Amino acid sequence: MFIQTESTPNPATLKFIPGKPVLASGTLEYRGLDEAADSPLASRLFGVEGVTGVFLGQDFISVSKAEPIAWQHLKPAVLGAIMEHFMSGAPVSGAAQADGATADNGPEDFAPEDQEIVDTIKELIETRVRPAVANDGGDIVFRGFREGVVSLHMRGACAGCPSSTATLRNGIENLLKHFVPEVTEVRAA
Image 1 (spheres, rainbow, N blue to C red):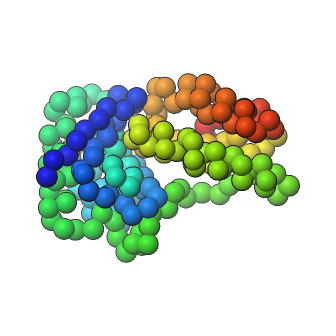
Image 2 (image 1 turned 135 degrees about the horizontal axis):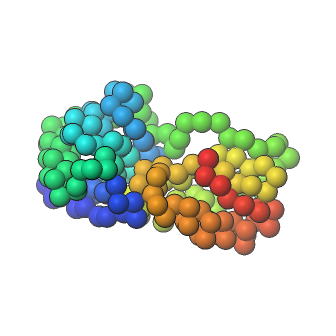
């Protein structure tokens, strides 16, 4: 089994591509071992000292590390854990996620009269933003729209990334303002 690695804009996160499907659909994010009980893969990765976050996509795994630890020391152990998991034949996630992963947990906040605007914003995020963000080992999820302000939740490599503010302001905000004149600002939720 050959596992490719790619750097992400977040220096604390690496993207691992196992060459096999990871999730059938959606994404899953784990920020600690206590959250990873339903995922044998994430649990195994949290067993590697220094791993602080695991984000599972359809064809990739983003792993975040604690700051003082260098990737040159951590990467071999993470590669080993991923390889061991796929060789074991164990599922990536438990029965609760068998029908597909959830995009994100949490309520959306917008006024009912803004439904048409929100639908347009969500379509733009789904078709133009999420694929680009997934290339960087992360995900972005709509959280709300109030008084022209779009709230988005950054996940995976994007969470805590030094360039995430620039991505929101210069990329996503400009795109949404162009297609949806009602949008005045984009903020991280």
